[in-house]
Image (cartoon, rainbow, N blue to C red):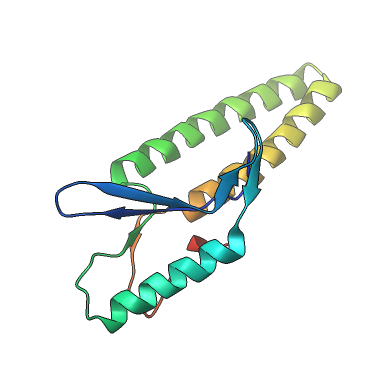
Length: 134
């Protein structure tokens, strides 16, 4: 699995969708990053669409409902982990408290990147958001 995997969905008016991802499969469980090729393709695609005067809608991230649900779930998990941390500190379970702090730091690192990259937004050809490119 790639910690930073990017995906662009190109959707036709009739609903057909083409997905372009920044990784390729090497084996059943291993993915190889194609970051530079993906970046070059996305930038060139935007440039060509802009040059042709296209009227496409440029959106990024999850849908607003899905993003809100993800934020709600993350908040629920944060409250649960904080409760466990308080309980571990109250009963003086230092190893458990240390584990929870470490897990929370790792969780914040990975989930923070996911939340940042998948924030719903619209953008223009001139300003491709930096978080959308590897």
